[in-house]
Image 1 (cartoon, rainbow, N blue to C red):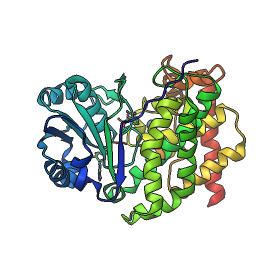
Image 2 (cartoon, rainbow, N blue to C red; image 1 turned 120 degrees about the vertical axis):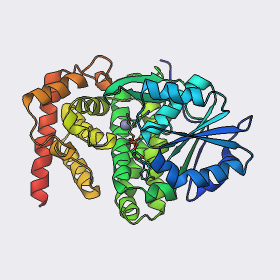
Image 3 (cartoon, rainbow, N blue to C red; image 1 turned 135 degrees about the vertical axis):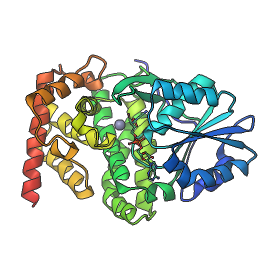
Image 4 (cartoon, rainbow, N blue to C red; image 1 turned 45 degrees about the horizontal axis):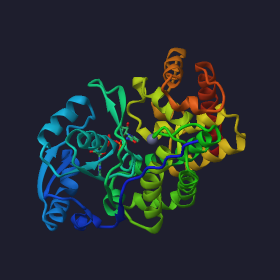
Length: 365
Ligand SMILES: NC(=O)c1ccc[n+]([C@@H]2O[C@H](COP(=O)([O-])OP(=O)(O)OC[C@H]3O[C@@H](n4cnc5c(N)ncnc54)[C@H](O)[C@@H]3O)[C@@H](O)[C@H]2O)c1
Ligand SMILES: [Zn+2]
């Protein structure tokens, strides 16, 4: 059995760290291109540029249009062709675009997440979408970012919804990696998990459970506390390594299935993943107490637990079929589950998780 482990080359996290970002960028040459949408550039553009210029970089800005599509990657790659360093700044879409641009131009890559909403900042892959905003393909770049810089003051100042969503993405990491390891399934790098990645995935979950409530309370007030630092690290570094080098299973496939129904497009990546984790629990026949425990924690921190919570108030059988069939596409990681998975089984697990969550919500009222 071949085991593989990949990770970003360097990771820096701290309150106000963007001001000194240039000192962490290890690159020959002096030209940096900053890729960010207007909102994000207004927030951090100045401190980023000052931080890079202080270390001798010339800084050009390219405005990110908001979608990670082939056309957007081609447009930006042309503009960034001579850059020594591409600095992707923002949410998962901007960072995935920066990764694809780096693959085209051969520069170094720095990712600067300004929300702790997904594990995209540390991973090696990009998720590409069509112009109609439907899933197009995964691009496996083989290389992780050279440097990841997270300013916790920026992340804590962003809307809490993004932070909660990242917690859901992080919790799924453990249940998926653990299933993948037990099933001897392969990870993103087509190797088997190391004990290192498995342990990181476990710590990722434990960190979110131990610090999640306090961290969400802090972020509601734009405060940076030790619990915020802990959860940012879990959502970003541990989750990224945990899913890529540990392996994925059902939860993210259910997320992918949910994206096929337009009604869920208003829900974030992490919010849909949370339903995926609950569905994975039912699919795997886990103890009901374990499921209720995760529902309770989700409700405590304000994460969605029912189909209605992610936009599907009244799912029809056609909706459920679309979701279940997309969840079971041959390339989906749900097939890492250690038993045969069918659309029927996914549909039944999804509606059962939804029913249990509804019951729990009314019990807690
Ligand atoms: N490559 C991977 O490993 C991986 C993993 C998980 C998710 N993803 C992808 O990530 C994407 C979802 O990412 P996301 O949930 O971060 O959403 P997103 O990238 O769509 O960003 C959401 C919004 O947040 C705004 N924003 C960013 N920073 C802000 C701040 N500090 N304050 C206020 N607003 C801010 C942005 O302007 C953007 O409009 C999906 O495309 C998904 O497929 C990729
Ligand atoms: Zn995810």
